[in-house]
Amino acid sequence: MSRGPGVIIAGAAETDQVGKLPGHSTLALHVEAAVNAVRDAGLSLRDIDGIATVSAPGPVQVAHALGIVPRWIDGTGVGGTSFLLHVRHAAAAIQAGYAQTVLVTHGESGRSRVGAAPFRIPPSSPTGQFEAPYGTFGPTTTFTITALRYMKDFGLTHEQLAYVAVAQRRWAAKNPRAAYRDPITVEDVLTSRLIAYPFHLLECCLVTDGGGALVVTSADRAGDFPKPAVFVLGTGESAEAPMISQLADFTESQAFRLAGQAAFAEAGIGVRDVGHLMIYDAFAHVPIYGLEALGFVGKGEAGAFIADGNTEPGGRLPLNTNGGGLSYTHTGMYGMFAITEAARQVRGEAAAQVEAPDISVVLGNGGTFSTAGALVLGRQPR
Amino acid sequence: MAVTMSGKPVPVPTPETQPFWDGCAAGELRIQRCADCATAFFYPRPVCPACGSVNVEWFTASGQARLYSYVINHRPAPGFEDEGPYAIAVVQLAEGPRMMTNLTGVANTPEALVLDMPLRVTFERRGEVYLPVFTPAPAPASRGAGP
Image (cartoon, rainbow over all chains, first blue to last red; front, side, top):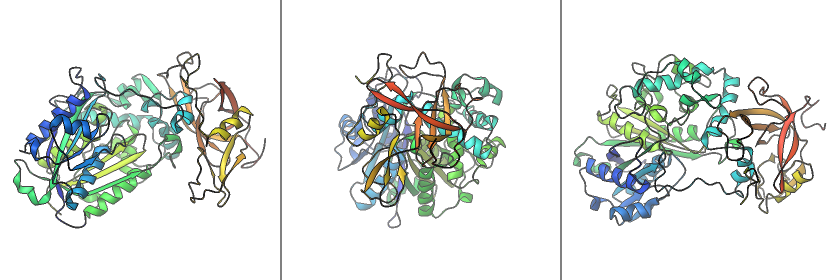
């Protein structure tokens, strides 16, 4: 976005509820979130001319259900960060004139699995041949496998890993929509059930139902909407390994680093400018990798940085202020909820509102450190 | 259905991976390297990920490795219900590439599984194929040396 006025998020909303919603199909979650986001922007569904979401149900089904006739379609489906990439791609499309008002939707019946696609790894795929035979069983057994290497190489302790969940629960306590709000201690985390050593239950994300949606349009129209515009100042994306076993270095995420660098460079900001931060947290180690990849701390320092209280309420770098995937909600593809919380913070309408963040950064993960997206959002245009 | 009687998943080879699985059936860990830049790589594919050359060749790796990282899974995958908590590991071959595996001949506990411990390959029948798994081994005299 080095040319032109850039884009804004004009509407950002979630489903009426998140959590356990057996009365909503996957598609119904998309629809409810979309209707809420379009209303949040003060628009009608007839104003939407571009659609972006993942399959299933995918952009064709979502557009059709909403009566939208798109002239621009993005079905990028690279895991939980996909919605950050949709915002980036929408920014390019809007500035190219391919669309004026893009709707990005997420809906996932992750817990109730109503109208959801079955999990299936084809046995002839690379993952089916080279990982699944060893008894992998979803992200708890794969995304987590980097952590012991990081702990050995950089001295991260079990207590520091556990503290990530403790810090985020302190934010969740302020958020009435969060699934879990009661305070927890490091001991609570370390005595919760082992899921995949070294990870205990409270170091793993929730599995919930819910959705969210965004309306993205040209920054030329920033004054035309009922709520303050959220300016998209910089964006980035990257990919690394489709299988966790093939990640180049288990102590860092190259995709996180490259996506973050691209977004910061485009926005022309540094870490000192960031007043609020969202980092995808499917498991407790992921914010540690994210803080280091974005350059907020040096390699090996993030565990102590979080354990020292820097990211919790009252700390100098508010992180995952909705409670995150560990305590707020995690439908499976959590990235949308990181964006909606960042938008609320920039607008000044969050449940756990931090002091006037001029800049909020969102870092999304897809798969198992497989893909990354980053957004720099701001209260003011560049 | 590509599972064993116990329900464990069985890999289905594709043309470009067949030489790897043929090697396993013969008791050899056959992987690829680039004939131009000499980079060894895994998983099997028809192009060198380091330099982009399609001039790639198969060779038999030493079978020696070190334990790079692991988890001990307490929520068994279908077919693994009778195993008790089991390690899903990633090992680094002496030749450089890494692969996911299971660890046999050693207690699958945090105390027994020490990162960087030396391992060697062995093969375990799974349906119609043989899976490479790893077991503790004496430290090799030098990188890439034979047993």
